[in-house]
Image (tube, rainbow, N blue to C red; front, side, top):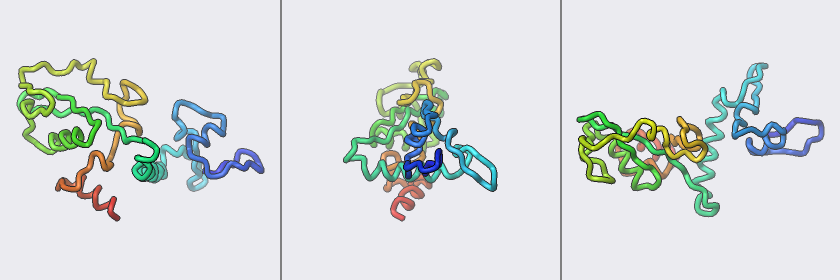
Amino acid sequence: ITCECTPGCDEDKLTPAAFEKHSGRETAKKWKNNVWVIVGGEKIPLSKTVLLKYYNEALKKCNRSNRRSQGTKVFHRDEFVGCIECGKERRFRLRSRDECRLHHNAMADPNWKCSDFPYDKITCEAEEERGSRKVYRGCTRSPTCKGCTSCVCFGCELCRFSDCTCQTCVDFTSNVKA
């Protein structure tokens, strides 16, 4: 992003967060609403355009390539899978590739049951997690996050698998190679 706040401003090629700080409108990571794009003569918030998709994809690629050198880590929030027999939802932690694979396989199985739960040997008679506890999904920004760009992943090397034949994994792996 190039700054045009004042004539002669030498701030050039800022990251969106740095641009927000430079503009003096620093809020709680809401820079997407403070950056405007002119489309057909109309001023539109960046968050309402498709341009943000390209920024997020570039950021993911950057994080993948620099992950080892900078210690950055792709984050996934906890997800729930429902039992076909009792209808209870069971929590899956998604902190490692193995945990992501267990959740991925459970989601792909239309006949998933509580007895298939990988962490504990449970049955349908076991208590379901309380509703008040389910809202805590493990987001780093907010404990009760309903889904944000920090904790919702639409595909990365941690949660997509080259040996899986589901359409989501096939699309991801073919796009990564391209």
